Image (cartoon, rainbow, N blue to C red):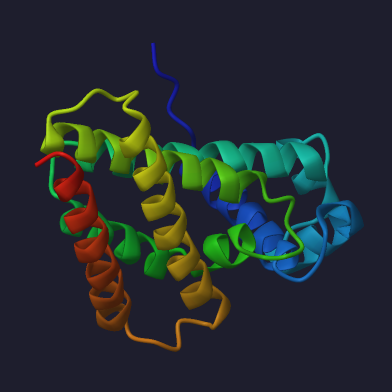
Length: 191
């Protein structure tokens, strides 16, 4: 039986996660205090401890929630074309800027960024193996999709770190141009 979470509890958890995201964009996790998170989330310390054991527990829950959402987004697009996924991911980033500023912050541990990159890489590999009728463990596809996914994530990282100064259309067009050249290289390998 699925236990439904009270909307107030969800709102409080979201506020605490947003507060931690803001702080992680500015400084290392080990330097963040419960009081700082509580102040930004507009809750007291008792409320913080009602939902979390400590800062690390909050971080782990936030990572789990974010990666689950990204995983669902990726699953939705695994049988579709890459441009659709890129549009959906950019929409998701624009709706969750605090989370992505935190993911791409130099103060962060890098774990969430690495896990996000691995998820994108897995999706790109799946798309390429289906498109080129190869196996998932094909060495060339492995290397090309590693390159392709890391370049795509680096493009997103630059966009987020520059406070979304470029338009989403510019980012999508730039990613598509890079992808076109990489796609041609991969297709030539298997033609």
